[in-house]
Image 1 (cartoon, rainbow, N blue to C red):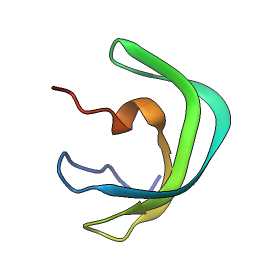
Image 2 (cartoon, rainbow, N blue to C red):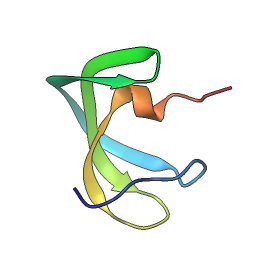
Image 3 (spheres, rainbow, N blue to C red):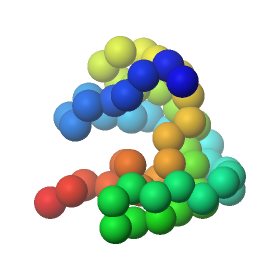
Image 4 (cartoon, rainbow, N blue to C red):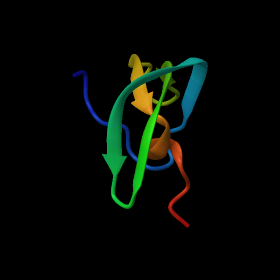
Length: 55
């Protein structure tokens, strides 16, 4: 694991794939996005539910 993104940093996805199930609070997903954190440049996979706007 490279680290955690923070709200407002942005994430630029370049592809998505089905992977293991992951729960983000009340949400669960098997869809993961690959890309990079727009603020830090860190590249990796992020579960789709972590990309949801919490509002």
